[in-house]
Image 1: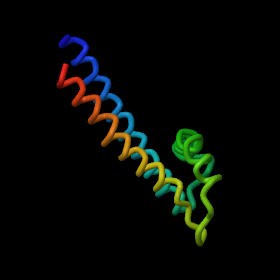
Image 2: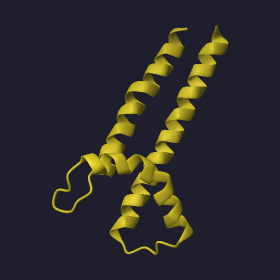
Image 3: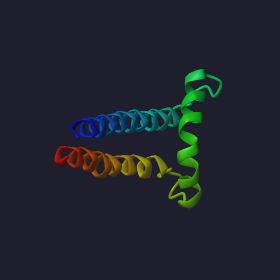
Length: 97
């Protein structure tokens, strides 16, 4: 049974790392949107292509309040919730096995 517990802990840690990296991608995308970055730069294109599938549906549903895009904030809060709830639940469930 310890093998299943170790597998669940490994999955939880990998999920935590992936969510943290994606959160940093969202933050980098928000910072780049504040400056006039070259849209043909490969880094800018990667950030846009990696984050737009998540940000666009939220941006479409939220109203623009004073020209401020709140979709990165919503996504970051969602990532923090998933890390606090799902990752910690997986670790605690694995500890009980």
